[in-house]
View 1: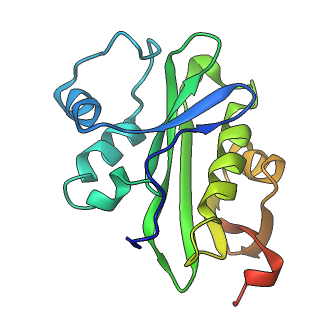
View 2 (view 1 turned 90 degrees about the vertical axis):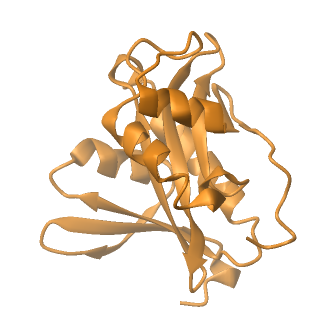
Length: 170
């Protein structure tokens, strides 16, 4: 990671706080322990996968890594999203998930847009991308609402991008 990376700071939106994971939270997920500050249906399978990869990808615990999604009203963790650091040729991939009990509130779009905007503060990043299976129209809507634009469409997957026009080097 770049030496100019910001310190771990929360990204705060109207309804959410996006906070970096701690190692103890990742361990709790992997050990099957449910912490009191988690929604009853957190973690989801994707959260378990990410928690299991922190040892292999320690930068994912950094400022430009993965975040827990905390609902401001309840203070509960209701999902996670993350940036798959390091970027490749200025492009950084993002992934997201909100637990079933909190879907339909716009949280995924709100969190995805906020983290994408934050990612673009890294000098080595000009674009945030996400691949979505076309069979998942809800995820396509999340990205569209977050301000991502369809960049390419394959047989079963679409790639969406969010970028700063004057920094998009393609």
